[in-house]
Length: 341
Image 1: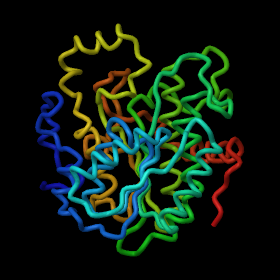
Image 2: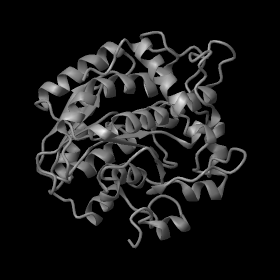
Image 3: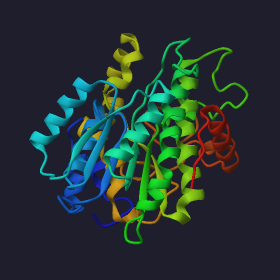
C-alpha cells in the first residue's frame, strides 16, 4: 500500500466481480494492524442487520471496540450478533439498540438508550442504513417522503443528538469520526427545497438522489462546523452490491443489469462493499481530516457527463456550502432537534 489515499488502487483497476482482488472490510482492519487494538473505543452502526451493515459491524468488532448496532427487528439482531460473535476475533461488547428509522420518536429514544448503554461514549458513528426507489406515496410515520425521511432526517436526528457525545469522546490522538453512506445515485438530484417531499410529479430515483445528496451535505456540514471540536466526517459511496437495498427494483431492471458484463464486473460482495466504510472509519490517513466523498477506498473524483451507474464519481452539487447550511436549518425545523452543546 504505497499511497495512503489510494491504498488499493491496483486491486480496483480491473474489477472482476464479487470476490475478486478488491479488499474486504476485514482485510482493511488487518492491513491497518487493528485486530484487538481498539479496546475501550465505542462504535455505533445503523442498519447493521443486513448487507454491508453486517460486514461493517463484523470488521469493526474485530478491532476489539465495543460495537452497537441499531435494529427494528430484535430476532434478526440477535441472529446477527450471534453470527458475528461466533466468527470475530474481537473481544469487545456487541449490543443491539432498538430503532425504527421510519419514526423520529423511535430514533430519539434510541439515541437515549444508546447513551445509557455506552455510558455516554462514542468514537465512531456510521450512518449506514438506507432505502432506495420506494414507490409513490411511501411515507414515514411522521409524514415525510420515505427516502428523505429515512436516509436523511432519521440520520440527521440521531447524529445531532449524539454530536455532543462525539465531541466529548474526541481526543487529540483520535478525533471522533462520522461516516455517512451515500451513493453515486446522488447525481440524480440535489435537495429540492421547494418540495422536499416531492408531492408533485414523484419520481423514485429523484427522491433517492435527493436523499443521498442530503447525506453528503450533512457530512460536509458536520466536518466544516464541528471539525475544530474534534469531529470529522466523510461520505462514502460503497459501490455496487446485491443486497436488500434493491428490494423495490423490478425483475426487469435487475435482469437488464445482469446482462451488462461491465456492470457485473464492478459489483462486489457484501464483505468488499463494506471496505470503503471501514477504511473511512479506521484509516490513519483520515485522522483529523474529513469533508470528502470517498469510494473504492480512495477520494472520489468528479463524475463524467451523463449518468453511468458504473461511474462512481460525484456531481458538481456535492460541495455546496449554501445548500448544506440551508439543509441543516430545514432539518432542525422538520425534526425539532438541534445540537445542544
